Length: 276
Image 1 (cartoon, rainbow, N blue to C red):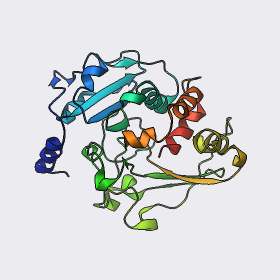
Image 2 (image 1 turned 180 degrees about the vertical axis):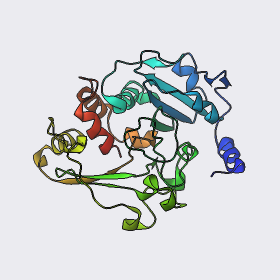
Image 3 (image 1 turned 90 degrees about the vertical axis):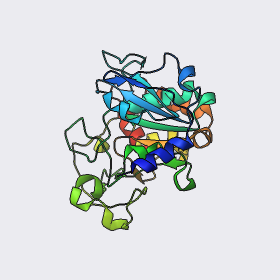
Image 4 (image 1 turned 60 degrees about the vertical axis):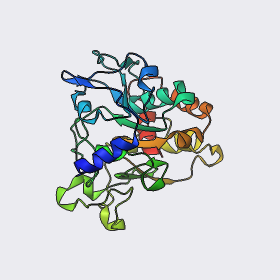
């Protein structure tokens, strides 16, 4: 667990307090300009019907929450979006529409309360692995890196074989590491497994190989080349402005278009596995 002293140290690195909690949920600024006025860290949440009262715990100096809601009761101060494209549509919408005014450090997350573990079949899984805390995502440039990803799943395409990080599935196997990959290497992962009903085995079009090579890797000549991708299950990660802007806005516009046609497109699952 991060100590109170460490949390205060993070606060000292950030700008003056921007948003204060009131009542049961975080009070959001009425405009993004207010949100970004002094924030070093912007947390972008993809919301549907989740309880966002947990955001009060992270109302820290210099941290700003921007919530995009696709639910029927958007939180006060959130930005409603059409219910298409899963969480990656919300993330891409933010990047495309605020490309020139991105925060120095942006955290992207589903709006469910961050907590340890993945519980199959439960929509409220918090997707934190090992001893990682949500505070770790709010710390810009950890170890001088321009992003923070904790890889908790891996998939091979086109076979659909998958592996899971042991420290997200079993409490007894959690390590003290907060690194992107398990410190124990291959021993930190479970065995490869296969589920014919999993979306990664879907026959829906486009296939992952078609989508990845054409829209992510921009390598259309190799659309049949197999790939193995490690990714943060639950689509939570953080990236610097420079890291995001290493790609032109048009790159994200093209991706956004692919996720804008239905509420649960297969491209949403492909994008979850492709962020890095």
